[in-house]
Amino acid sequence: MSRMPCWSAVSSLLVATLLPFAGAQAPPSPFAGPGAPGSSVAANERFVFVVFEGVLYKFDAESLQLLGSAPLGRAQVGRPAVDPGRIGQEPPPPPPEPAAAPTPYDQTVTDALAWLVARQDDNGRWDADGFMKHDGEGAPCDGAGSPVHDVGVTALACLALLADGNTLRQGRHKDALKMGIAWLREQQQENGLVGTPASHDFIYDHAIATVALTEAFGLSHYNLLKRNAQQAINYLESHRNPYSVWRYQPRDNDNDTSVTTWAAWGYASAKSFGLEVNETALQCVSAWYDQVTDENGRTGYTKAGERSSRMPGDHAARFPVENGEALTAAGLFGRFLLGQTPQQKPVMNAAADLLLAHPPRWVQDSIDPYYWMFGTMAMYQMGGESWRQWQGNLREIVGAQRHDGNCAGSWDPVGVWDMNGGRVYSTAMYTLALVTARRKARLQ
Image 1 (cartoon, rainbow, N blue to C red):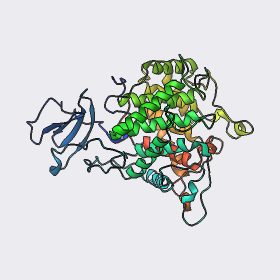
Image 2 (cartoon, rainbow, N blue to C red; image 1 turned 90 degrees about the horizontal axis):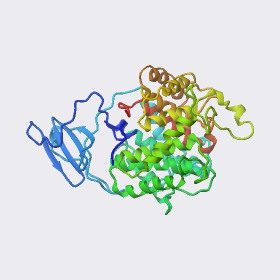
Image 3 (cartoon, rainbow, N blue to C red; image 1 turned 45 degrees about the vertical axis):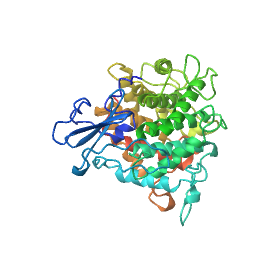
Image 4 (cartoon, rainbow, N blue to C red; image 1 turned 60 degrees about the vertical axis):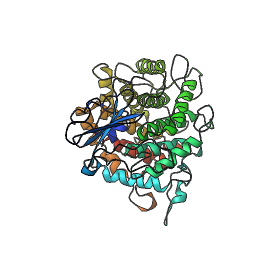
């Protein structure tokens, strides 16, 4: 299948973390063959490996699409990359990864991932409301979420691990990732749904799990996951409204920007890794964003100009919708997933301006990890001055990380929707935002 035009040097959003090609010289053609000093070619039925000037390049054997590269030591020249394996098997040692330049967020991310891994159940799940059973001595962590969202918070934790550079084959937290992905696979039903329709918003959990499965499959080259990832995409397609997009219930002709963006992320990831997706669905997503985005760049929830939703009661008073642009952030990031650019869609510049007018501020009525995660991903893709201004405010997130007792490394779940996923949710979302800030490549 052809790839979306925006996915050139990297395979997906998260692989941008793993394979920083920015500034690198062009890779050799797999047809070049050996000849230069230290060069060689090896192939199997799935991949072509080219060693050229001390760098191992990996190509897809069918399309000759560049899949990745890594520098090799003198003793490693000519050694092919690892072959696809199976979850639970210990693969051969992979080539070393390039050393990443240090950033102001490194220790924050390290501490956050350590907190997450320490709260993982033995079966691979992250327990939204019972994670504190893993606490050590001292006062236990507070911030329980809802038990109906274990699938969603487990998928978010896996995405945080993937974004940090872990795969099912390598990385400091590969074992935790393996366990988490295996648990998600075990929750998948015959119809492809990951989890059960136990809550009215179960599709969120499934959509996030779909992204985690497709990314883990593609980044780790584990064929065992291909069927699960494809079935998860297939369920999303069966849930989508005819001639439109997604909301909570299957095919009820109700649509919203939030669910649609998570689903679009799953489709974009799946497409980048060669899974089957309905191109019409992506066209419907594009049409939806245009339909609900006004001339000022604001993307609405279910219609143009509509702000984010709030729970009944005092929820709206505690978290005024005017204090953020969560859906504008989701829509802007979604447009990048579709391959759109601000040059083609000037309304994206207007959307970025709205986000800059509401940067991350750790003030009680403005805290929103959903907004800040999507906003950071979108503004990173904008680049330039937009990214510079937004990135400067990420110190608000860094400064709010806990450093005491059993909560050390996590973030208090005090944001607008944190009562659903709890402390695991807030910690995974902020980690995703900060890992975005460390990336070396962009989608376009």
